[in-house]
Length: 365
Image (tube, rainbow, N blue to C red; front, side, top):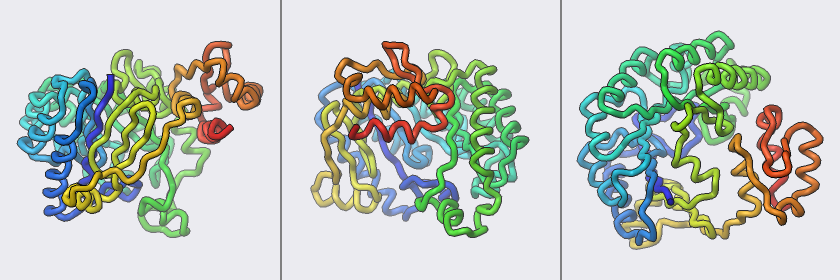
């Protein structure tokens, strides 16, 4: 069954490392955005009843309870099998958590990124490890046990000792799901631009090198494994039964529909993308136009490899795929980057570290 993604690209602050299209925008735009988002959802002709729902893109936890309830009421299927809300530390109260639970939210993803004060200061984040611990307890008291914590490997000033400190907090909190992302350096974030230009702002001169970041990731794989958090996707670790049901749809090429700015949709045949900037998205909706600005045919025979290989379960090639990608599969298998048991292809531990290079070889081959 399909899933629904609701994009809410509004935040209380723009973090230095963030390369998403979220940020701090005028309150009036945020108000108009809510109305536009409700209009888009309301006008959708549902061909199925969604089983998962995900609210992300920024800090949807900012929404007032009555606003969030109005939006969620437009999506059929409540109570959903899984309904995730992204939340920034410092935004959770017991009252809000109870309201979220009553609306059908049964999973919360906390954008912690680090539990170390010095690292948080460099990114512009204002929470503390103790605050996160209090909010995890509040969510549990409200009946939301399915929790994820995001961590970033490669933040300015990060060391083996500080990374271990963050992992120690994961052990203390006992959350059932953790996402570990290696910091991306590109022009889409303030920190990335500063690093690429050789500057020193935002801690750009304190970046750990690539070898250190790889070591942080491998340490996380080992430590999280001892906590019962199995790596089931390159960046995601969970106790059995707590894998993100919604995100698994992306990796297994199952259908989903996205609403809001820069939201993507996939119906098995076609991929669609909405206008990227919130102001453009709102203008299109208010002008009676479709928010979709890009549409292209899906290529499942390629996509199943560079999406599905992200999963530790791998992919099961059909006869046509084995013929088409025979040379690629053989080359990476011989190099020790792919494991091929005759039925499934999987990335090896070394292949995971070179996954982007491997995925590229399945495009247009």
